[in-house]
Length: 195
Image 1 (tube, helix red, strand yellow):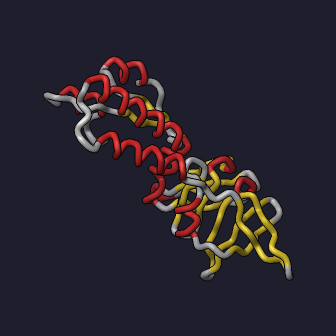
Image 2: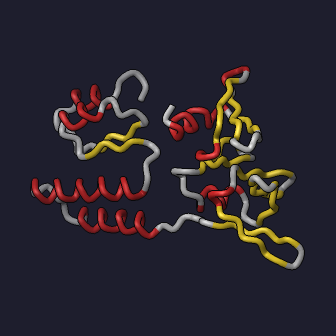
C-alpha cells in the first residue's frame, strides 16, 4: 500500500472491519493478531489458506452474532468454489500419430512464439494447443506466473533473477533458459517469490 500500511489504516478507522492480512513477509504476524485480525496469510496464497480464513471469519461472525442475512450462504459459496477448482495437471503434445502427456510440474515455462504455444521442459520445446491466456486461467497461480505477454514461468523452476537496464528483470530457469520480465510484472514476480 502506498504511504501507509495496513496497521496504520486500521488505526484510523472508527469501526475496524474483520481483516485478513496477506503479505510475503512474516515479521508482522504477531502484530496482526494483536489488532485482532481474522488471519495472516503468507504469499503465495493457496486456495486452502483462503478457505481456512473464510471459515475463521464465518466462525467469528457467528460467535459475535454479526452475521447479516445471506453472508453465510455467500461464504459457503466462495469456500465451495475454492475447494472445487481443479488446476491443470497435464498438457498434451502430438508426436507423430500419438499424443504425449506432459505433467505441468515438469514444465519450466510456457512461451508463445509466432502464434503457437510451447511447453518447455528439460527435454525441449513441445507444441501444445492451449493459448497462454487459457493456461493462465487453468494453472495454479501459487506455482505459475505470467511474467510477460509471451511467457508463463513455473516459479519452482526459477534459479536466478538478474537486474537489467531501465528497471527490467531477467529470470534464469534451472534448465538454463532466460526470459525477460515485463515492467508491469516485476512487482507480481517479487511478491510471488517472496522477495
